[in-house]
Amino acid sequence: MVALASDHAGFDLKNEIGRYLDELHMPYKDLGPATALRTDYPKWGYLAAKAVAGGECDRGIVICGTGVGMSLSANKVKGIRCVVCTDCYTAMLSRQHNNANMLALGARVVGVDLAKLIVRMWLEAEFEGGGRHQQRVDMIMKIEAGTIDFL
Ligand code: RB5
Image 1 (cartoon, rainbow, N blue to C red):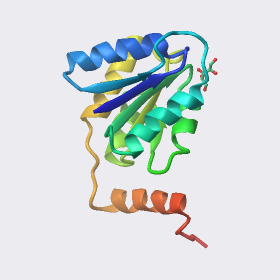
Image 2: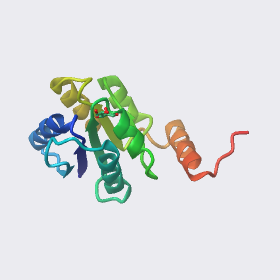
Image 3: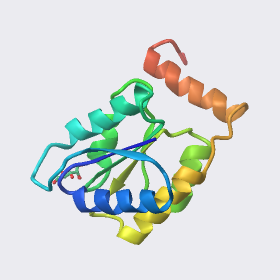
């Protein structure tokens, strides 16, 4: 299940991505907003991140003007690794190497067709766990938990 959310700037693209997820037969939960009225991205980034961190959804896609505000907000929730992607290569590698569990898109940065391609690459790519990538992601999570000291 994919958690989907946006602010006003990402509203139209959220609807496009929702329709695309339908085409892909990928179940998703639209967490809002329900209209394109001006709203604050931290709320929606947080709600989607909580859905992923809590296990209700296994991935999240959040959309604002640049993707930056959404990713910053989502990454404040424990267990979230949210990446802003403007290209397919980064989207794929963010899954394969970083095990990103949320994707942030900038509706004012990428066009609809590129956004769809990014979404598909990101959803299809699998984490290459078990080796060095797992160790590095574990290190990130230890930084979050405050249980690592690189000094
Ligand atoms: C809204 O104008 C804009 O600031 C927001 O969508 C986002 O781009 C913030 O990072």
